[in-house]
Length: 104
Image 1 (cartoon, rainbow, N blue to C red):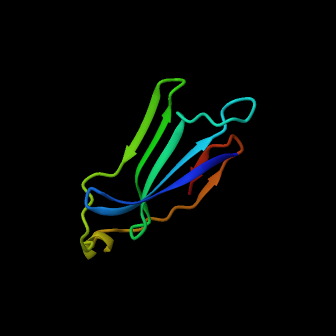
Image 2: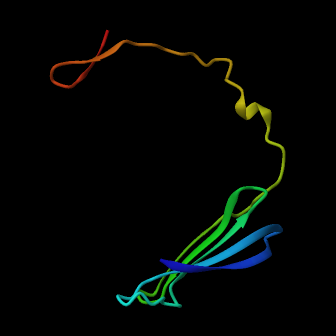
């Protein structure tokens, strides 16, 4: 088990983000190690993690993942169109006794 705290809302590079920090039990007696935590900032309207930072002081390790260059814009519809020269090729494929695939 662990515990977590709500960090509220903050501006993250121009985007409203909701923050959370949580600690996991690390000691054999079940006590929380306050220096080891994960902090996560989420853009609710984008349903995306903007930042996740995990800190492990015992092993002097910090792992950080962040989204950068976020632009709110309409997606170009051409990204979802099948190219005119796209062609579907079909082959009958069956496994042989040796396990190799054979085409007919």
